[in-house]
Amino acid sequence: MQLNETSSDLSSGRLLQRSLLPQSLPVYPGLDIAAEVWTAVDLGGDYYQFLEQSGTLAVAIADSSGKSVAGAIHAALFKGQLDAYGQQGRLQNPTSMLNSLNQLLCKSGTDDAVALAYGALDLVNYELHLGNAGIPGPLIYRAETNTCEEVVNPAIALGRIDSAVYKAIKRSLNEGDVVVFFSDGLFEATNPSGDEFGGSDGDISPLRKTVIQLAPYSAIEILQGLKTTLDKFSE
Image (cartoon, rainbow, N blue to C red; front, side, top):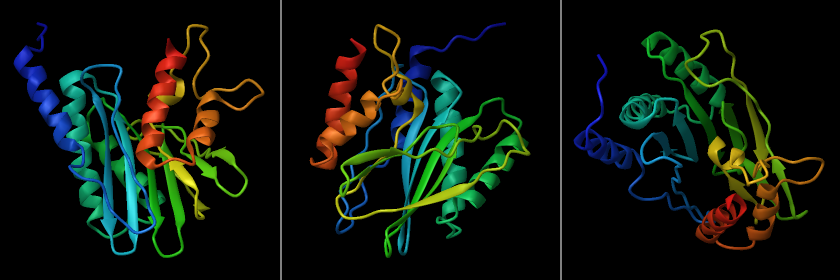
């Protein structure tokens, strides 16, 4: 027997998906923050959240493999797990967080996995601690050299293999630097020729070029500029 989602189910799913997103953005002296969800489908498991404790600001970009209402529900459950872990006051340790969340998901019995990019910024020395699980990046623009680095720290999505090991890396940030977190949808978007927005063939990718061009602007202008450039690239 096959169960089809009704318009009421989809409406409830959209409300749930919207409820996962922060109602306001963190405000800290010296930081300019913008965030938004762009999805290729009307409903799914994409979301982001901020976690805060004294001296630390963390951001999580997550994408549940479940689609439509199921994806939104799974994302909500995972957000609860991430919030609970954050309340333990160990936000600066991506390794511990990712390994613990992976174990929880593997034991949950669900078939859905969660791709996650996680970054915890030490607000005292501006060191960014990063962990990845199935999502590329982030990108870091360096104001001093006018270059854009793609942080590479590959690992499998959470909930797939209980023996998977997740590692953290760190990057120091300086005045004028820009950090761009994103899901794989932005990186893998293609143009009519099949070229990826985040891919490169011996040259800098269109995504990194765009970040360099937009870096002097405000966070919201960078976000809007990325979306505009991506739309043009995909036409």
